[in-house]
Image (cartoon, rainbow, N blue to C red; front, side, top):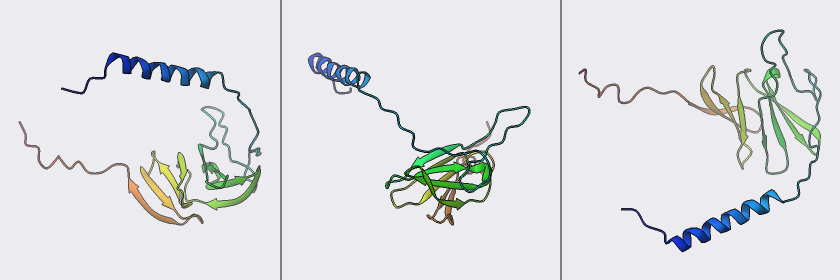
Length: 149
């Protein structure tokens, strides 16, 4: 049987939790513009596709670097745009337009998710060279062990 928490302790934890939520709800919120970019294919732009029928497609994701960089996945233009202090600092070319998500590791490696076409997670160096990939779909290891009924 699992451990039981005395009712008094459970109520105290609940009150602390509710106090934290109350503080968060009454906290001041400030809004600041961090990046502004035009849509297009230019060096400082972000790509967008606006078909007559269907949903528009633009940047799918962004990630924050440890030094304040904002990495924007501009899959329409097959690149990652890196902004810092509101300005584009560099462009990293990527192969393909099917990436849906981006992240940046503490050592500045870039992780890209393609969950629609190649169904894999790719790791890139800071210059955009592919270091490796991990497939999202693998073989069924248990298929060989199953016996027909």
